[in-house]
Length: 231
Image 1: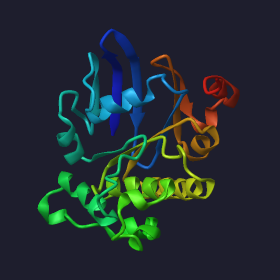
Image 2: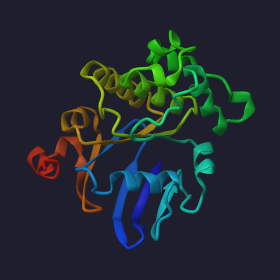
Image 3: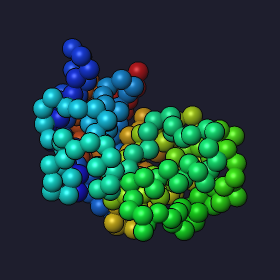
């Protein structure tokens, strides 16, 4: 469904992503691992269209979307939950969820029941401002806002960052349930190895802008992966 093919991305003279290739398929969780600053978020920005690439291609459902703007990729079914959540703190929970409507045709602009079955706490907080929620609740809201778009590809950038363990478990359960439905591809960026390992169908490890180790979970050599995660 998604194929990032030999992507090169620069910030000025800095070569942030160096020929990275990555795939994500429906019903699977693809985990992208690596230390801070190795290019993981930059690769995600290339995939969603937030950062132009110098060379390589982004293919989505067989189409070359390399030059598509962000809003067109979103309308095609690519949803992004950014690092740091980036919810709107002065909007209510319901208003935050409704911002996901922007990628949908008018006839589909409603909040799916699935959002509240996966995150029941949000239904109780619809009138509360996003900024009044705990960090874990804000992360749940950010994921729920992406699900409002009915995505075919869900991209999650370090969803466990700064989150209490109980919410991490809930988020893991949600990711697993979404993958098991079989219709959505999930691309998960993580530093928390155990969380990623338990969810991954496929994994890739980045170091200095390159994919240095990749494969299926059952073939993962944990020591080789951990070597690229320790400081």
